[in-house]
Length: 556
Image (cartoon, rainbow, N blue to C red):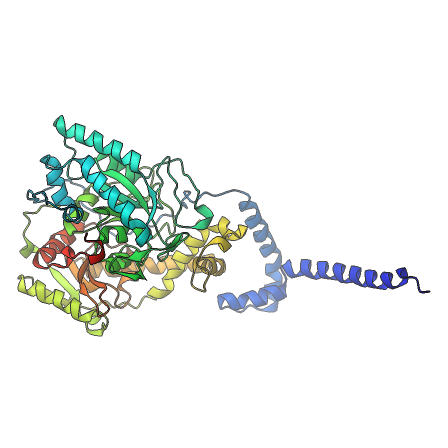
């Protein structure tokens, strides 16, 4: 009879050999060698000599050790790099002299129906509160009820701050009775994109790995709005880590078409304003995240100049491109909110002190207005709506000068700056494997983009920054002779250029496309000249009705 153990030993020894061999091969595969360098050269588009590869091995091993040493320090998302983007061209400094505001607001009458109140502008609501025709408490309750009724349909809400909001509203009503009025935002309810930290609340960034996160600070913009008397009611959805409209709980909807997402990444803010669930909300933009959802939801979005508004307490995606701005139903509302948000902040070293002076009595005839004729000529979708905007301008007595938006700079290539900064901001998430928890996992979703961005050489990032410096000078030379330049919102590479250079943009509804969804037009201005955007935008909205349209499903 055969001994069963005699068959075991050859198999065991073979397995042991394979295990040891696999360990050695695996270890060698992680070592830096001349052969490994030759393969890596393909990722950066260079080719070195064999002798040059040999010389690099020890240095690259030292660099790898440095990487490992740095990774032992846990870097919070709130820690910004020492390199700070400055959008100011050579010799350009923003005006520092601040004057009193003249918003030119007329007293409004209180509508009989709640839905009519819900869709009023901040400017009109402010006169109702100031004149004590409505209380902040009753207005807050109205919006709370609408949020409870419709937010699930739109998938736009993360946190409802009911108790805190009602307490603040009652306080604002008491101040009115005592003769204390803080300004146009006194007692006005509002919401924020849920990438702004507020003590005592979750700040989820719209992403599964952070859905229970609490940050023990309050964002500067929230503190400023609180001081101005505004009432924080809700924290709204955003596409996970500031991309798109898909978040850990679903997909935020467009109130004009529930089969369609609301675009992003300020998805919930724009959707809620569009549906009349809140009079204004804060959004952020790195590359279209105010402009795009404002377009989709038929609302008015303002992307301020880079550095005008503090980002302290906000999630960082790209330290050199992130901007914070208001989304509302009207141009004037956005100007009112910006007047509160504006100002340098010692907690955010990227902020730049600059005046924001708006006076409703300033003459439109003094504005020099241009338009990017080449973008209007080449545009297809929504082109007819955009051409009508030019007609409205001419009929209102505005002289339009044709311009071309052309540059020899490799603008599209500079996107690597956003990618590298984003990968750094979420380095720990990538290395820990928690990026697998994000809902979106396609080729163009953050997990894959962040992984690929690990291979962007530091040298090329710096080169992109240098090219960006040239682009800033080039665009300043183009913009400095005009007060406002009108552009199709998405034609050409305007959106990327102006986000890279830090120029302000005002996105306004200008009609509907063939599918029945809102379309938009964009007004651009020179750095720190948002008041000119407000001037021309106000004229356009007073001459048209698009900002007054309401999505039928929510006009109840």
